[in-house]
Image (cartoon, rainbow, N blue to C red):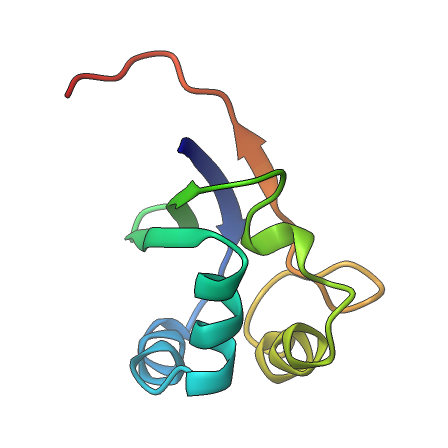
Length: 104
């Protein structure tokens, strides 16, 4: 099991909408993530900077950000593109964060 963290950027004024959309995350997207070894997935919001900090545990080679070749993830990216900073393909601008400390 591997732990991964990354940051993304929420557009100002969309905090409530971001939470609303994730409260109703699509079951098929959750199933895809689980099927591909993503678990213990949390996203935190820094109110001062509008940075979203994501943490997940993964089994296998990749995490949630590596599933962009699937139709459901592409649809989710399109759905979220209006409220986040995104790349030309609507994937979220996502910056991996190296782990510098961990305690069990």
